Image 1 (tube, helix red, strand yellow):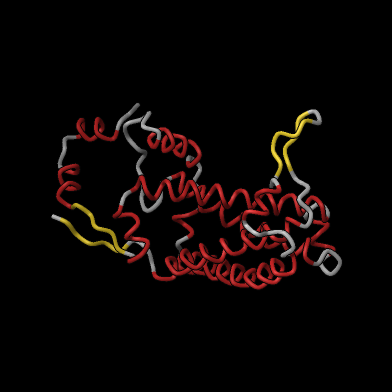
Image 2 (cartoon, rainbow, N blue to C red):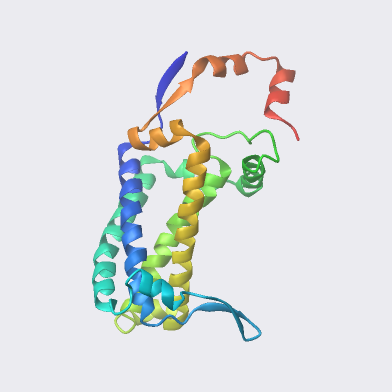
Amino acid sequence: MKEIKEKHSFLMRWTHWVNFPVLTIMIWSGLFIYWANDAYGISIFGFSLIKFFPQWFYNYFHIPHRLAEGMAYHFLFMWFFFINGLLYIAYTIFSGAWRELIPKRNSFKEAWLVLLHDLHIRKTIPPQKKYNAAQRIAYTAIIVMGIGSIATGLAIYKPVQFYWLCWLCGGYHFARIIHFTLTIGYVLFFVIHIVQVALAGWNNFRSVISGFEVIDSSAKNKSNNLPVEKVKEKNGND
């Protein structure tokens, strides 16, 4: 027998889906800004391993000479990003949802077990409620990253007016490095997040759209009616 259970609130889903196009536009417009001073890369002993980004990349996506356009879009959608993030943080605080998001003392250990399960090295996954340990760490980290992006973004946008913020971020050049690194972090988060959603299946994706998930209560009841020895065997002690 299957039953429908509420999983995600409307405000959580709203801020989640608004964040995706807003961040996409900000990353895209950020490339227009970065083109004007594309100084970063990875070098070892003076030998350049990676350069962000080669000239053919800029030409293919028609990025060169669009600095003013990039700044206009970037600083416009920065407000949507800020307000949406502020709304989400306020909701998690006042609704008490932060209790399900903040990592616990053993979350880092359990996150490793979740990773082993996802890689099919470990058969069972640690017990979880709404979010597993890896999700708690990732969702908390993305909030910290958002705060960092706002702070460093303002520091490099108005380094004179926000001189104190620029100083807290380690100066203009270091703030720009942090801002760029956080952008790479968002891209990696997007990729991993999409892969995880695909692995989790349609039921999980549907719950983020509708707010409800379908649970097979008969399978759950069978698990609850198992003897203690079978439950331990099912949950795994490896």
